[in-house]
Length: 257
Image 1: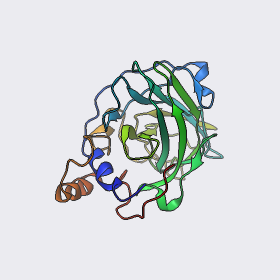
Image 2: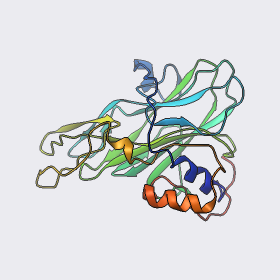
Image 3: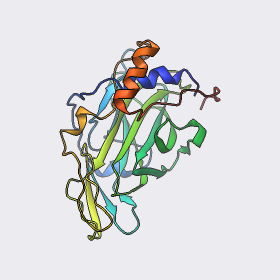
Image 4: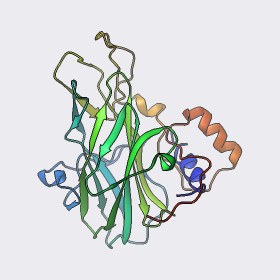
């Protein structure tokens, strides 16, 4: 990763309205780490960034419904997948799993934690997964361990990059998980993909929030391809988006993963 990522991430933040995308079925095979099989849940909040090689059609998916243990803050049933719905093999690619705000990624088996200096600005945690090749019509799934603080909003982001990190073929999010009816006194609280969390105060009072369908008006999300905006427009986009989801603005190049 290097400073060249700034423009790519700034460009991906400019689309404020996320198009509706196809929902993929959730199957039992989706919980197997890096296993071939249908991707879980939904690719909601995802968009092509750089054009993939001819015949390759990459996307990601997230569980549509997860839950959080109110005592430990640990999430359950969170699965991320990468799929190739094209007619040709993808070649070597990598998947990033990045957490924001009240959602922190604690483990993704088979993947490597991203160092603090290499995390995108505004994120709190992340893992990089050396997916390798995804055959045409196949997918690979990863069980994600995370924590979720119900007193905050929480988001997750799934970029798909070339093995050398020079191209980003797809990015899902940052997309929120949350509930509009927090239950701090219940053992478990269900969280829905695409719903901005309505935080509950420590005393159990419900705070403000947005229901599903409203959050996409302000959620920093994916957008046009890389290197398409002058710096001035990038700065304006950052002010409008609040800076969430933008990669760091100054960093020494790091070795290829």
